[in-house]
Image 1 (cartoon, rainbow, N blue to C red):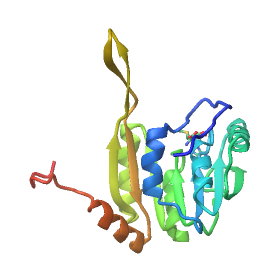
Image 2 (image 1 turned 90 degrees about the vertical axis):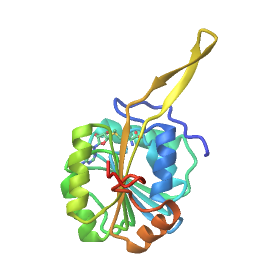
Image 3 (image 1 turned 60 degrees about the vertical axis):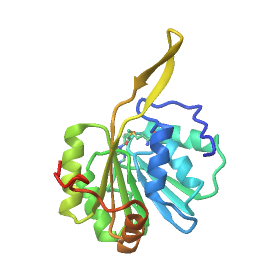
Length: 204
Ligand SMILES: C[S@@+](CC[C@H](N)C(=O)[O-])C[C@H]1O[C@@H](n2cnc3c(N)ncnc32)[C@H](O)[C@@H]1O
């Protein structure tokens, strides 16, 4: 993966590189895709998306953070047309997005409603708080958007008394779905269906 340079900081983010790697696999962006992002913040995801999609529309509600996105974007090489909007979604969302990423959770139900109305093919949301993850999974299900829930945690090794200890990052809940049946079929073929049950059939 090409490096992302983030010389400018924001109070939240950036989405960590390992999380971005999984996210990019789920977003499955191609050169004809219009990617929309809610909560661009440091721009780490915006930059990665702008190297893969044809167009990017990135929204951020906080003026200082959209400025951070802008500066970090300028410090990196990207190929897409990028439109940065200071807006609180669902305000400012484009009508013709193919892929939507919610990195920020404010108004997420209204954002998902808009995704359904405008027929966004793939929708992915990252959540770090347990209660928000549960409510958001329910909101995806109610709108018939949910295909997969992925939960993972990254730990980084560090030198500990001549051996290796680990520092753990917060777990991430990634909700993956969309309105695009073809894309869903493709993903299912590649990675198997969402398992509501454990392979041993015990359903936990
Ligand atoms: C966890 S940060 C996202 C980090 C980002 N992916 C990165 O790599 O820097 C969440 C961001 O979403 C923004 N946000 C939350 N809800 C939003 C909404 N409805 N519209 C626009 N921005 C939103 C917050 O201001 C915050 O900057």
